[in-house]
Amino acid sequence: VGSGKTNEKVYKLIEFLTTRPHGPLWCHEDISPKNQISKSTEQLTNFLRHVVSVFKESKSDFHLEQQLSEVALQTALCSSSRHYAG
Image (tube, rainbow, N blue to C red; front, side, top):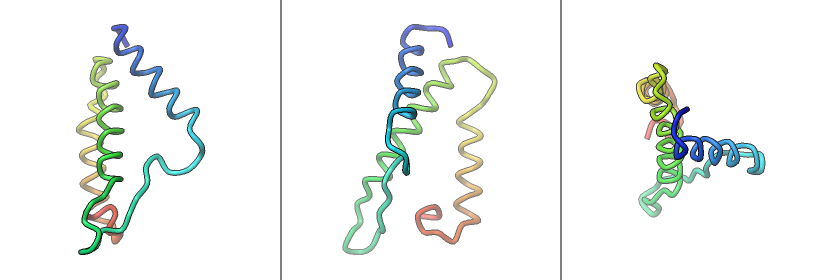
């Protein structure tokens, strides 16, 4: 990891993961006709954008975006859970 900005992102990500209470990284809610807004979608999107940006800026050959896309697609196609498949 090269730049100071990237180092700061890495340290903040590590701090977030190591200091938060145990439990899910984000909340999840049931989506229904009465409840069509999901805060967990925004939380997960922001978290993954941050993680991907750390790996992207590290200039590695890890291809995290591609790997996460493949895992997300496989999970959505194979899961009976509406939280994953939705």
